Length: 494
Image (cartoon, rainbow, N blue to C red; front, side, top):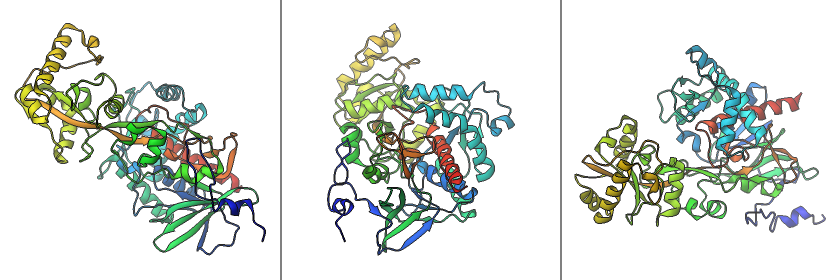
C-alpha cells in the first residue's frame, strides 16, 4: 500500500488556522477500513442545542432519518440557560392577541444590521428576518411550543418578544423540553455521552460524510448520507480559545451559561479550511461568578466602582459594555454597584435582588456611605468623595463632565439610607465567531465555496452577529437556519 498524503497528515500537523491553531485533529476517511462500530443515517447532527434539535425535527418532518449526538448526558448547551424568548413581527400568536405592533420584517432586518454595526452577513440576516414569523408559527403549531406575547422585553421595544412559557425555568429550559418531547414523538434518536472528536470524509472528493465519536465503550462512527450538521455551539467555555481569539479579559470572565461549550465547530472543521469569521466577538453580561447570581438591571442604576474604590466605566453604557469594562479595566474583574434605598425598591429590580438572595450572593448594606464602604472592603473616604461628587454633578446636570463621564438618560441620586453595594463581574455569555455559512447552512471554505456535506447552525456558525445582538435573535436565527438546512437536504433527496 502506497503512503498517501492523508496517512502522513494523520501523524502530524493537519491545519494551522490564522488564529494560531496547529496540530489539529486528523481527517479520517469513511472509506478506509474501520475497526469501529458504524451507524448510518440520512444526516448526523453534532450538538443538542436549539439549532441541532430543530434541524432534526424538521428533517424528520421532511421524511429524513436524522441522529443527534450530544457529548453530555443531557441537553447542556446555552439554550437551557437562556431566557427563552424568540422574535417575530406578525405571527399568528400576535394576531390572535390583536397586537398592533406597527412592526415589519424590514424593520427587524434593519435593527439586526444596526446592532451588528453593519457587519452581520446581509443574506443571513435577511433570511432570519423574513422567516422568523413562519418559524415561530411552526414551532407553536407543529412542535407545540407555548408562547406569551405582548410584552416589550427587548430593544427596540416593539412587542417582538415571544417568551416561552411553561412550568420549567428559565424559559430556555422549557423551550428545550418542548423540542425534546416532539423529537421523542418522531422517534428521533439522541445519543448522549457521545463526544464528536473527528469528522469523516470521502477521500476521493473531500465530501464530509460522518463523525467519529468517543463514548464510554470506545470510538464509534456515525455516517450521514447527506452530511454532517455542526450544532455544538461556540467556544465561550474554552479559555484557551478565548485567550487566543477574544483576549485575556474575555478569558477571565466567569461563564454565565453552559460550561460545556468548547469550540468543536472550529476545531473539528479546521482541516477543511472553512472561512472562520468574527472570532474576536462575544456577548457578555454582569454576573456574580461564585454563585451565578445575575444583577442584570442593577448595574445601570447607580455608581460602579472597583475594589480600589475608583469609578472605571460610564454607567450610561449598556450592561454589555459595562461588563466588558469591568473585565478589562478592573484589576481582577470585580466591580461594585452603589445604590440607595429608593433605587433598591424599584419594581424592575425585584428579580435581580431575588437572584442574589436565592443564590446567597453577598449584598452589602449600611446606613452611611462610610459604613457601606467598610462592609464591602472599600475605602470609606474615597467612596464618600465619589458619591458626593456624583450627587452634586447630577443636581447641576454635569454628569457628563465626570471622569469617566456618566451619560445615563435617567440617572438616580444616591441619597436615601440604607445604601447598598452589589459586587459583580463581567461574565461570558456566548461567542459569535465560527465557520461562515450560506443561507442553506452550508459551511463555506476560504474561497467562498460550500464544503460538501458540512453544515453549521446556531453559535457553531459565524456570520450573523458582531459586537452585540438583538435579544432573542440567537434562538430565533438558530431555528430559522436549522429549518433551512433540513429543507435543503430534503431537496437533495428529490
